[in-house]
Figure (cartoon, rainbow, N blue to C red):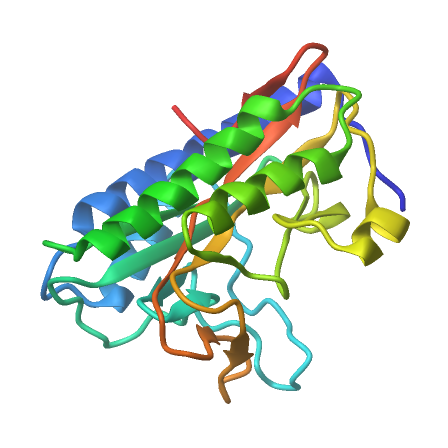
Length: 259
């Protein structure tokens, strides 16, 4: 695999993009409440990042199904929707679990991040789902440093999720990021024999990665709906998705998609 290492200056440019993503998602978070449509949240995101001089990465992004470029400016996934939910007329309700994923380009460099937010009062199981997903991301970020194998990080992520009685999504993973949204390497949140044999790698200073645990309250199986995009849990259980773009430094890492 061809992994592109970034200079300090390039990481600083990615941090500027990441700050716009962070500000956009904070505004979206504040808008998540009963009666608000996912289309309204999507419009707010577009307004926020374009006002900062950025362009979106998701709109018209191509998929394997001809004629189904992604129609939204953000991915907004509700309840059993894991990732790639399409914003629309759906009104949020008390008890919903909402993931908002935002990717932008600013000055030629990309930032990508996602949050999961509960609407109103959630059952304890769904509160725990969001908490465990956040803890899994934080655990990974805390382990990042040059010289560690990604499989060692992914193993701890998987263990944290499964010890809590949840499941890791297998079909979708994190990714390298830089001047393109998707670069090498692939960043799984679990360990498989295939990854250890063919995809594992050692972290190096200058790597920029989008780490994004996707966690399901039930079984790990997912399906893609007929729209060609929306990924849902097969058993109807709820899911959470939380993501940051990070840069590996000489000693540890920096989170680029925060204030």
